[in-house]
Image 1 (cartoon, rainbow, N blue to C red):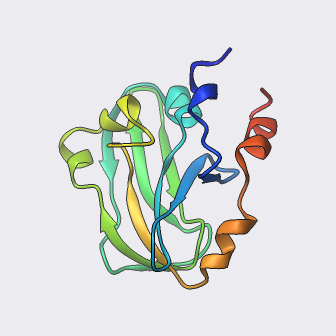
Image 2: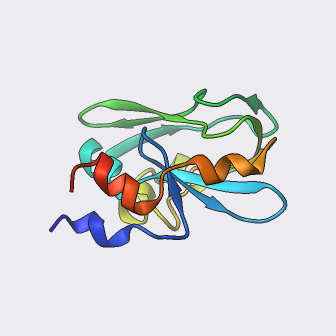
Length: 132
């Protein structure tokens, strides 16, 4: 059994590009990468975060993660405005590896249409995507 399998939550939604999305309140969502994604990347050494108040559309590159093995883009699941970033990641990118669903969140977005959340992958669909 994969280590990250147990970390999937029914309360979160997932993207095909391995982001997790958590509904907060007032149309705001927290976004990070899944444990599966961070495990594939290896040790993270740098995180390029978006600008707060920047507008993004679905599938825009919002952040860039660099590891000793590769670099990977983090995409937006919604059209909307970036309302917060996790500044702790600039000093300690390994937070993503240690706590991808907690302290390792990447950004928060105010979605133009919060109903788009329901169109994202459930944990069961994400398991199928990753062929577990």
